[in-house]
Image 1 (cartoon, rainbow, N blue to C red):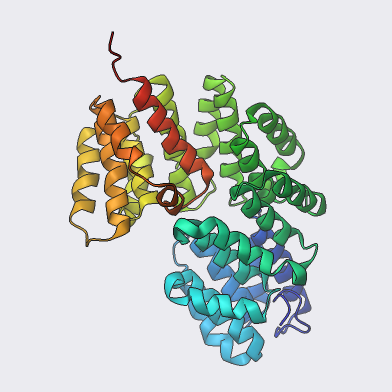
Image 2 (cartoon, rainbow, N blue to C red):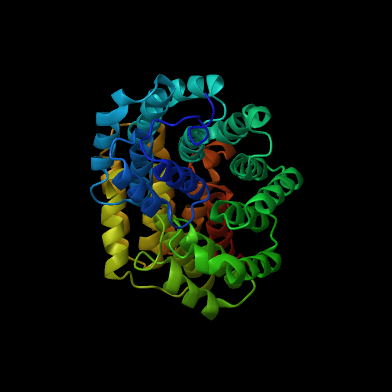
Length: 404
């Protein structure tokens, strides 16, 4: 099976709806503006367009849209009207969205048979970046490498392969792949975000700021509603903060990246919010009171607190506000969960932040020192999160009293 956007013909009663679907798929893969609108128009033209309904479900779930289940129901209700390859695509995609752990093995087997299904590939790769465990860097890179022969110079594959390579420390290879992806589709938010990650990891804050300023000046107007628009602005705010333009960085964060203003989905919103506020607190020592929007966002992700990625960021927000009661509530909530490696790691991260806010910097450093390199990778997300933990360690070490 080819990628679902390239199957000839698609099971669809409208040529215009097919064009809209193909356009939306590229926008989805680029985290750009317009995918939801184009899919909605396609479904208006053909309510039985099962592939479009499944894609629309993916967009709705990624963005945390209310009422997303109606698109899944529409896809499942019309799946019996389409070809067997399309049915497989729909089933695998929905399975990865709803129950990724349970459907991971089947999705991997499916991609070995259908390596050009970019939407399933992107969904699986995104899941593995967060839940791939201590070996995830190699797992994700191997996944994208495995389809590179079939997809050749596909921009969406190049962007993801470049990101995976840079995360694995292959910066020269990663940059070359990302630059090829941007040359093919320069407006893709996903691709420019991946290059910003690479530059962050290389410590090239000034280059990152110039690159992102230039990209936003050229493509920003067409990206305003893109799912990663707030995250790309966050990378620019982080670069500005790193080069000493703190006030400009705070303004940019507030304008584009806070839970009140961002275009990102719930998890990326949490990461950007906590990632910025905790960094600023650790370096400046200035306490930021959490506003109602941040508190509401914490409530939205609270049920996931047992995962270390969520625990780090939720506890990080409470730490940035020096909210000791909030930090203790994090500890108490995770502490009563069932025993698991995730629970243990989440508690270590929370307790390190509790110690830091209590000015017990020795205990904070000691807690973090026990986290192995593999466990740090298994926290999920990208190297940005691991560098944040390293900053917490550095600040804990720097604030300890010295013996005269």
